[in-house]
Image (cartoon, one colour):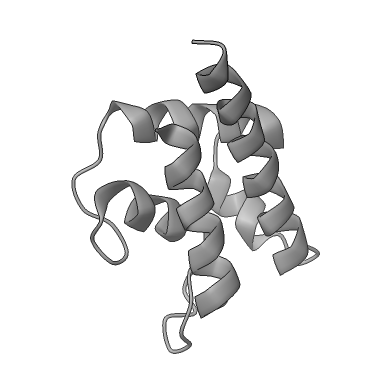
Length: 100
């Protein structure tokens, strides 16, 4: 289920830490790598399927940008906002899944 994978991305960031892209010297995940890890099961990405593309597209709509990495890396962005976005997306998909 897409909602479960998004909640896993949320847990990765919450547990391991949140990063701006390119901060690989620190432990943690940026928004995109957390999603890729949750959906592929491989740290920092792997083979991604249709569920990932559906979730990615929804997050693009929610942020108003095609580049989630740019949204993640906004200097004013904070971990709380990233976690909030993922929680809202998970809830969106939970509602869709419950009505399916």
